[in-house]
Image (cartoon, rainbow, N blue to C red; front, top):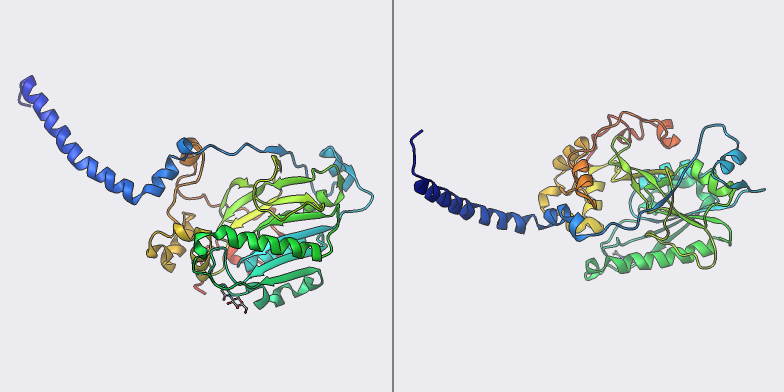
Length: 361
Ligand SMILES: *[C@@H]1O[C@H](CO)[C@@H](O)[C@H](O)[C@H]1NC(C)=O
C-alpha cells in the first residue's frame, strides 16, 4: 500500500463521509417515508407503554379428578348445583371455528347467543354466513339464540369502525337479556375463534369463589393449530352476570385465568376467506399493496408461518420484538385440541399439522 500524508488521508475520509452521507440521507428519507409504519412498530417500546400486567390465576387440571378437588385446588369450593352458561359472540365469518366451538361447548352451554350483521365493523356489506350455513349448527339448534342486525352500507363507515362495533355490542346485550339470562349465570364474552376449554367452563359452572369477572388467557395460534404463537391472547372473558353486565371485548380487569383455551387467528379454510378478512375488517389499512392479496402469496405465507401484512411483531420491548421476528415455528403436536377437530380429521385437515395448503374457494 502506498504511503499517504496525514492531510491527504483526512481529506479522503472527509470526502468519503460526504459521499456516504449524500447517498445515505436520501436512502434513509425514502425508507422512512415508505416504511413509516414498520419503523414506528419497531420503535414502539419507545413511544408506547405496555398495559398494566395481568394477575395470573393458576389453572389446575388433570383428567379424571373429581370436580370438588379441582375447585379446591383453586381455593374454591363445590356448588351444590352448576351455574348456567351463556356463550355470547359477535359473529363475522369464522364458520369452521364456530362449528368446532359449538361442538366442543354444547355439553356445557345453556344458550349460544350469537349476533351477526350484514355489515362489517368497517361498514362493508357481508353475507350472512351463519344464516346461510345454519344446517351445520342444526345439532344444537334448541340452544341457539340468534339475531341478525341489518344495517345500510355506509361510505363514511370505514372512518369509524368503533361505531359499527358499538352498535353490534348494544344489540348483543339486548339479545343476551332476551335469551333469559339471570343474575348469577355465567357469560362467556369472546370472538368465535376464541374457544374456552371444557375444563375452564366446568370450573365456571361448578366452583363457588370464581372471580365475578376475569379474562381467559388462551393459547394463540395463527392460520391453524400447526402454528402456535404464544399465550398472549387475553380478550375473551368470563362474567357472573348481574344487571350491570355488558358485552365487551376489551380490558376489564387485571385477573386472568391461565391456559383457559384456544384462540386460532386467521384459521380459514379458503384463500377467499383470508382475502375477505384482510380487506373487510379493521385490518384493512394494513393491506398496503394490492399484491398482499394475491392468492399465491397468501398460500406461501400460510405454509411458512409468516406475516400476512408484512408487519413486525406488535410488542412493547425490543427483546420481545426480536424474539418474535421471522416465521412462526411449526408444531407437530395435535394433543389437547378441541375434540371435534380430531373426530373429523379429514374435514379439518387444514387446521392440523401438515395441512397448510388451502383451496381458493
Ligand atoms: C342489510 O340488509 C338490509 C335489509 O335487507 C338492507 O336494507 C341493507 O342495505 C343491507 N346492508 C348492506 C350493507 O347490504
